[in-house]
Length: 100
Image (tube, rainbow, N blue to C red; front, side):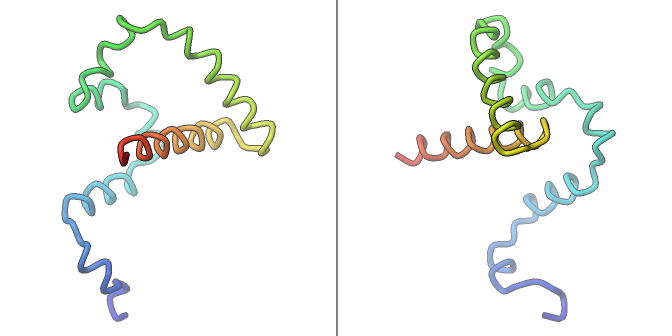
């Protein structure tokens, strides 16, 4: 209680995860907007650097934009919040698919 850290946090403590969280916490929206996230992540996931040459992106853009618009309208979310929710839903589906 003195340091504001639970026993569970101490047991599960991972220095690398903590460092990443600290960087995220210190990154402002202005700095984040200047980063080419696709390029940054393509180092770890090369598909992100090449998929635009392999995929008919417009085929997926229209239904995804419709879903974003629906989330904004149905839930009265901002464009950013709708994007984050849709991204989280996709992440959850990915986790479900991989846990099988």
